[in-house]
Length: 84
Image 1 (tube, rainbow, N blue to C red):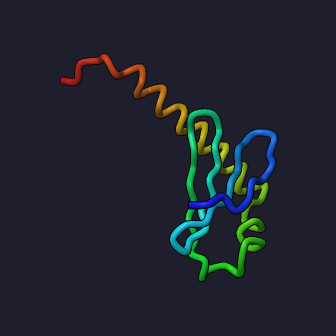
Image 2: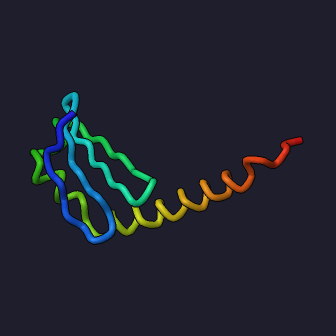
């Protein structure tokens, strides 16, 4: 797997990687990450992939990160609760 591009962003660490004939978009925020894979045959190259990383897309990613954190915090709080 090789890093093709690092995309600067004030909140997220965004990387585009290439592996096994797929572009992989990796978005990280703190301890959480989201991965999106797209076949090289479904796009016209790296510029096409970069064009998919829009502000509405990143806004949805942020909402998903918040939900992920809430799920994790709930799970963490319940780790010592006896399940009946």
